Length: 289
Image (cartoon, rainbow, N blue to C red; front, side):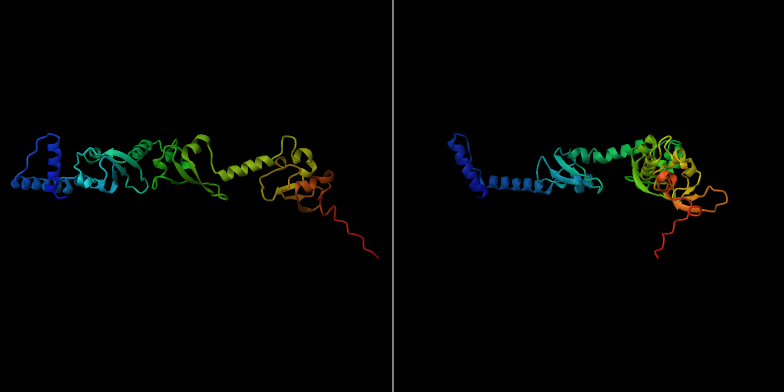
């Protein structure tokens, strides 16, 4: 329907309802149509200064106009109070939130998630003399990296920080790499979990008071030279039933006998198992005629 036909139809309805209606002259019709076309062009063209002109980054973060669906920031003035949905343009964030357009274009408000992270990072930086590197240089030497803050060093961390870091065990034969929050390490004095497990296992196999090889078999304990895989262990740290291979030396004066056996093998049958092979050579089986 063209505008003139539409106006005639509306006029007929108004007259039936007793309302006044005047037929426009051709000049008035032309003027009204011209004015309408101008208003439409202005609405489509958008404001002279848009929100994107003031804050170009809004175009990248804009998701949807919740007040006027379909209307985008380049068609809204900076002072527009439409509520919009936004998404943080940082690839490691992507947080979505609702905000009025003018609070972003004129007040400069951005992603609240990133703002909290920046404030938290600033508050967690140590004052001179209070960093991990200065307070605990031994632990600082084990630091590899701060997981969520690449480039940070032990000078950027408070000893009470809850930031997760990657650490390397300083024990030469271990060098295990593991993650742990800094405050867990300093608060509980915890270290390498692999070494901790080994210490726990070692504690389980240690004898109870009065139950060691030294306590129960002192004569056998006197012949112990070393525990081959753990030379630091002594007879007081071995159970008689231990299966650790040890090196022994004969206690008989002048006997050069040396041999390998476990405490379990030596303490069996009243201490007669795995005796000195020089003093007690293995019996030859009798030959048959």
